[in-house]
Image (tube, rainbow, N blue to C red; front, side):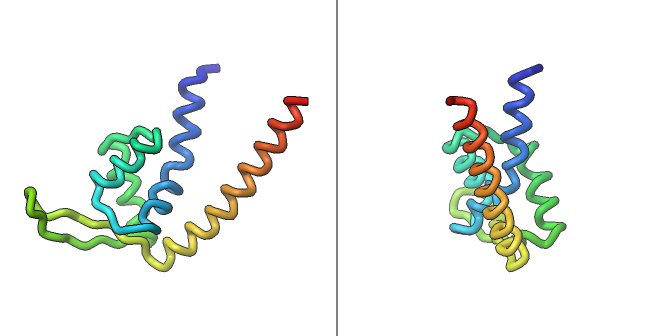
Amino acid sequence: MNIDNTKAQMKKGVLEFCILSILANKDCYASELIAELKASKLIVVEGTLYPLLTRQKNAGLLSYRWEESTQGPPRKYYTLTEIGKNVLKELNTSWNELVTAVNSINKNKEK
C-alpha cells in the first residue's frame, strides 16, 4: 500500500466539499480559495483548483462575477448558488455521518 497516495486521495475526495464550505462564508477568487485551503493544510495548486471550479460551475453549484482589482487585472469571484447551498447541506450531513462512523471504528480499535 502506498500511504502517500492514499492520503492524497483522501484529501482529493473532500476538496470539492471544502470549496463549497469556503464559498458558503464569502465569495472568493481562486487565489483566495488556494490560500484558505493551504492554511487548512489542504495544499492545492491552480492546476487542480480550476478544473474543480469549472466542474462545480457547470453543475450549477457556483456562479461567478468579474470585479475590477486595484492590483492587476479583473478578478473572477465565485459565489455559491442555491443549488450549491443545497448540495453543501447534503454534503455536511454525509460528512458528519462519515466522521461519526470512522470515529466509532477507531474507538473500537483502541480498546
